[in-house]
Length: 457
Image (cartoon, rainbow, N blue to C red; front, side):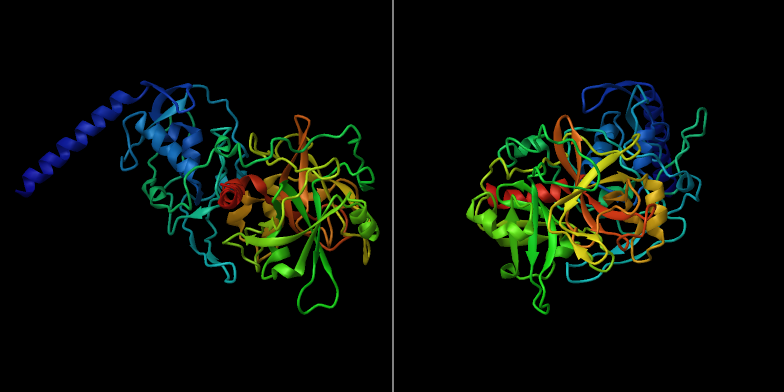
């Protein structure tokens, strides 16, 4: 009986192997409509790269399943065959860290995530591999990171010509739990503003200047009164919808609704009263503070929040929303990745600005960002893809205290897109080369849209 079972198991195995061999080099069609070819997963760099990662997104898992099905393969196969785009010239969103690529193949990650009032703990061996996202669909948004408990990769892919086909432990990635299904931007046409991020003819920007002409009309001044403080604090937000403001989680975490006021259309804080009387500025109260469910105040992970205002903001020439980066992902590997930020934060030692000021920043490369953040022991380096590091273009100029929650904006196609939210950074005036950290908005679009949609449908 045992010999019979083994015989039939061997037959099935051989049949699968023969069928898999026949499918190699077979033509196939990708989900984006482009032509492809069935090849071993180790020979398809776009898909092989995903199998090395500890963090995956729902659309990425769906993509893997789709390319496997296209070649009649599945995740349980010992030699997976995938439908790979014929032209392998399409660049990945971020380049692999050379140091990571040369490390050992084995990687094990364990993570425990709790509510916003609890801490997050993680154990990462020195051989942990840090993955990079591959841009496969321009119209597909992503979700916040989802973690696989104990997910390991048995071997790093070898994509050099004539190499021995690599085997991958890919089954674990299909055990991930996702918070929701993949969301496409066209599902939310009625949710998002019809017009956003409009480029003013006055938008000739110089670093470290006042926004006297109110070019950045999406900047929101947040006046915060902590219960145990006698002085008022300040943060910055970004208007992205008539009822929603995007900001940093640490600005509003554990804050009572009555302890925050939002001011729109403001330039000078000292003229706020007159600005409101002239109906140039608008004041709103918070109806809901939506802090990311996995925000970790100790490590500043998932430092992002939404504020739903009590009454819709009226769009005027002085108050307009910025765009969210739906149709592209910001790639800091591009030449001269200059961006802007703005706020009412500290601009001289110990002096808070009365005016809204603009500063020009540069996004530093992810590898360098990771090296800087490693020095900050509380930061979990596995979250590197969800943040971006910035330095001031001019010496001594950067986002500073009071600028928390401020937008990192980029001009693209004559529109302003908010691609980051200021999280934390070095002490003001410490000079160039010391990076500040911002939350990468593109990693949280699914979270943003899902929470906005709850009250808008």
